[in-house]
Image 1 (cartoon, rainbow, N blue to C red):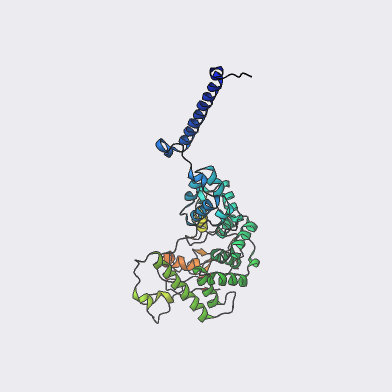
Image 2: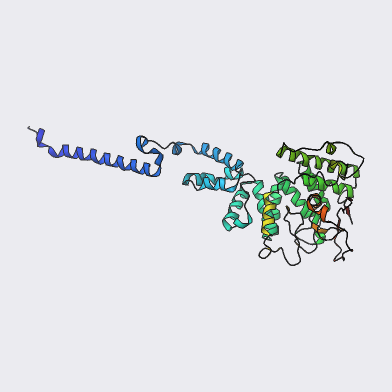
Length: 379
């Protein structure tokens, strides 16, 4: 049987050539697409493999966890989420959000929105203690959602979050969110003791005053003084760590028969500590301060006042909840710690005795130290 060969099959060779040309065109199109989305692969690197796509998810998650735990502001993390679809998906992983640090969650009042609320809620759902505390403070004081806010702060407190423990202690001392009869001094002291054990300076100072005055706990002046000195020492140490070049007078570290930090006395032995710059406020307190700064739109309520310490931001949840200075009656504080900080920063130079202001109710008032530096007493 005779078969065809040679030039008898011209179409077969043409088809093979056409297939090769089509394959080259497809490769060129793929190279153009890669160069379009990855400009750095132009020229001699065109068509090479994208190594980022080859990285395993576990390695990318590890990098994102490190970023979320060391971010200096929320923008550091948001910029990563908007880079590409893969980083956006992995960045919202529960492992990454659970590692989010305080500065990454530092949302400001002017940028508050429903998406910001959802993001904080998403972080809180992963068990992030900082997110639970920040969102709890915002809901409790700003959004007037007392139950949900207290629950979130309690969730953070269970995770041994010292600021959350101290904030809950302030709530118990003042009966915030309820009536005067809702105060639980013993619970407040217990929460303060737990926060003080974790090294919270304000809780240490609050616990020292409670022991000195027998407020919610059996009176023990010597133990109270020990806690106050420890709080003053830790406050001074934190400033020296933040600013090693700071100069500390030798008189601050020397013993003096004077009890308080007047001229020639030792500030470490005072009720108010050394005259050093106050530490930076927690982002939650900064949010409260910014939120209520615009009194036209975010007034706490009719007849309600803000804590006079500028870095606190806590508002009253009912009339006359906070205690006023019994010397001038012009300032009020949510806690002894706020009073001590505001006294040495501002109020010491402003407080002056005036005619006894009229009692508006039977609330307990703090006898804030006057110009002579007298200690605080509960009345």
